[in-house]
Image (cartoon, rainbow, N blue to C red):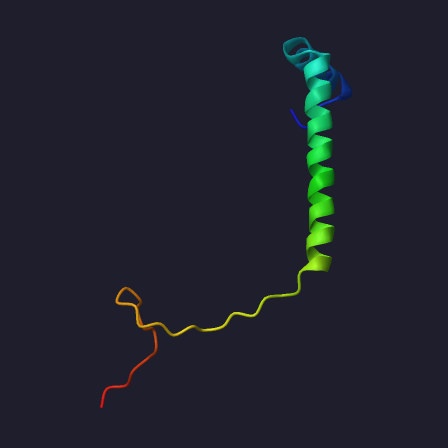
Length: 74
């Protein structure tokens, strides 16, 4: 069995083209390419513009808030 030869891949390609058509495959390819480009641009812009955020503890006296500080038995 092993790996697939070039003829297997060509048959798979022909079947995919027959099922979906070339126009739909072209649209899917361009959509995927623009999505990857947008993701790369967003990662590049997002990393440069926003500094790392610091998490601070806010003490509230809300009845639904659970205090997670450890208390010792005395």
